[in-house]
Length: 230
Image (cartoon, rainbow, N blue to C red; front, side):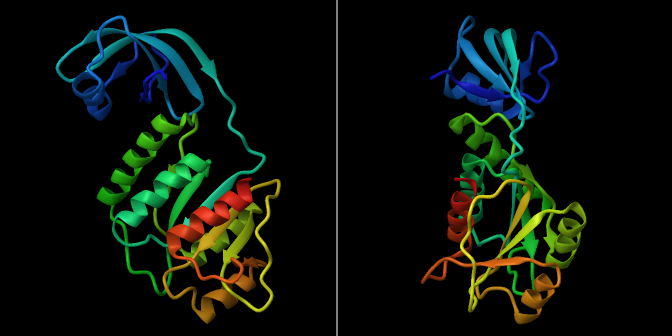
């Protein structure tokens, strides 16, 4: 399998790898001039390239072929999930990237515990890059800024997204794949409050649930994503 690297600028015939990408190429993989690699920009462009020069903190390459892959839009999915504690958030973001989610929104609710700061969001972006390199994904999953439930419902209502609220209820609907833009809402430990469920209902949100089980945040995010994108 060809080694893959992220480079935001693929317009040049000689893309340059810097930062962690250069460190990985030079000090971990120990690439040599003349070796073939694949470079992607996270926006659909993929290039086959040759390593031309390795310096202390950058790798100069030369593109041989470049291709553009249109972004899939038929089953566009945003996952707005309350950030779980510790490494569970990183694991969740990694798996959502691998599965093909378009955007992850750190959802803020009445029972939220984790409020990710910019430094943590930057680390999550690095997690997305690493997952893309492993799984072969061409379009980057966006890490959005934290957003309250109310503001997200208003935004989705204005954009016409189908909104799915993962929450146990008397008559929950099964989660099924649909065509069109969808936003999946995953609450905190303890679930959404009654007032939040009522607020969601005022936006014509569909309530869904996993049969016979209460799932943890990251488990629910992965399980429902698989059902919705299958």
